[in-house]
Amino acid sequence: MLTRAQRSNRKKLCIMAALVLLAAAAYMTVDVNFGNAKLLAYSMRIRAPKLLVMLITAFAIGGASLVFQSIINNTIVTPCLLGMNSLYTLIHTAVVFCVGSGSVLAANANAAFAIDLVLMGVTATLIYSYLFKKTKHNVLYVLLVGTVLTSFFSSVQSTMTRVMDPNEYDTLLTTLVASFSNVNAEIILFALAVLAAVIFLLRRELALLDVLTLGKEQAINLGVDYDRCIRRLLLGVTLAIAVATAMVGPISFLGLIIANLARQLLRTYRHTQLILGSALFGMIVLVGGQIIVEHVFTYAVPISVFITVGGGLYFLYLLLTRRRV
Image (cartoon, rainbow, N blue to C red; front, side, top):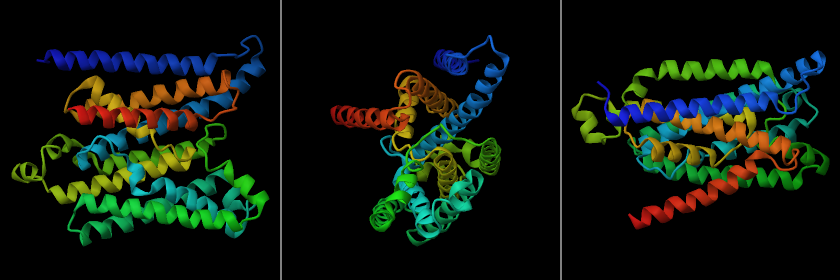
């Protein structure tokens, strides 16, 4: 028997899913010439991969951000504190700096995606597995080290750009800003396979999220291997963020926005609903924002700018409301 709150949340999720479908339909049909079969096919061939990338990115960032906030037990933090965005910019800068923008590693979308995913995944796995053991599974120390690594990666990347050829730097800039303009269908399949593997391998830990948020002592008393679950979930978060960042570039504040909007709208402890709500919010933000970018601003302003500005304001709002409580 469902409670009133559960029925209300299901209705809200259904409404959000309907909004996602409407936004997706609008993105696929706005300014499309349905009278010309060739132009119609060309438009669908261009827009369909972009739409899939936005949906995958929203799911990865939304789910990872909400899981990250739950295991850290803080709703105003994001996975970018682990240094994934800075590591992404460093990897791209290092590739262009060492082998040039015309090389296969930089010009080929599949090769660039594979390099990003492998290096970010391996680095996160090695660093955070070692840090967990070294700090006796203290998550706060891991966050502190992640903040330090963010500054380190940014400093190295800035040093490379200062001595880089100006023409190479101009080419590099286009890859350091989140964009849905150039995507590859093969990358989509690769990303889906990685996310599916992460979800499958962490299915038991994800099912225990409701228990983990009760606290370490309570979770251990209920028979949960708390340290192992937190370690595996944190590594899963880094891999999901690595997939999203490697696909479209760094979007720092998106996770903060959609995870907190899901918590405020649904007001439940059930992570199945919260993760779904966060992912749906992300899809609405990305698809709706891309429609505005393409048809209102005609690509003059990337969607990451709107997300960064809106996310910064929303972050200040969260800080002020937390102080009042």
